[in-house]
Length: 315
Image (cartoon, rainbow, N blue to C red; front, side, top):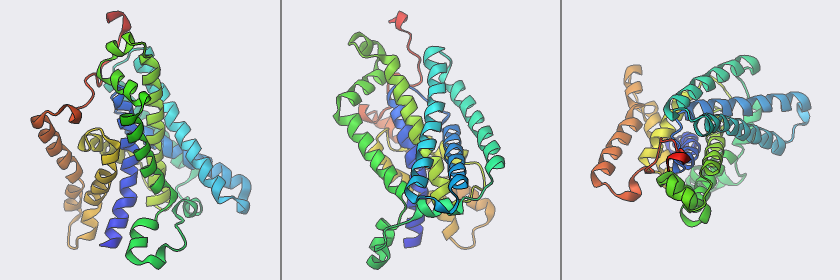
């Protein structure tokens, strides 16, 4: 059971990065269906930067720099994808749904190219990311469950908590939410709608990109076996499951991680049935969506202007 929960937490943080970034994006009124592609590009940039760094320094690599280089490169890769999305949807006024799907296709293509370019094994780099506290094993099940994780796991939780605080307790969060709810009113109040949407989307995509790096360097222990776009779709589903609240996404991501890997811990399950098990997070999301729609509470609904472009001249 402890081993199962540890694996659920490690995989869940992949979803947490993706959903936290998408929540920030959607709070501005942007519906970015390009999250799977953003996570692929983020992972590609992080792994490529790590590949170049380790190739350059050889055996003299600094664990701190190895981690920092990969995280910064990943965030920049996701940030640039968000910038492209914002330019197309805010400046050029392209359809958000079509643009997001195009970014997903682009991101998967970039990921496949980078796998062929850099290879699929980053075992040496992964050791830096999965290093845990030295005394974790001495604390029994508590240490293994809460203190035996790598730096990206705790970073995901920290970012989710900080994002939740900013969105609900600060002036910036209030302005961002007003842009997503009613951009015309926000504009009339002197809030720069385009700037908030640009920043929210770019920062959100940068955070989502870290989910791709987490999956490769932490969960797969450096083995880049296949494209990670499926986890991007689960991250989008998690946004709905947690009713657009980053703090709830922490628990929700662990639930999603547990549901996704549950079949691997049950003996006698065929391959076909294992694939059905992987559908459980989506089924649970549909149930939550139905319940929240029936209850119709304002705080559990998406931003009123989600997915809609804002044209100032139509105000």
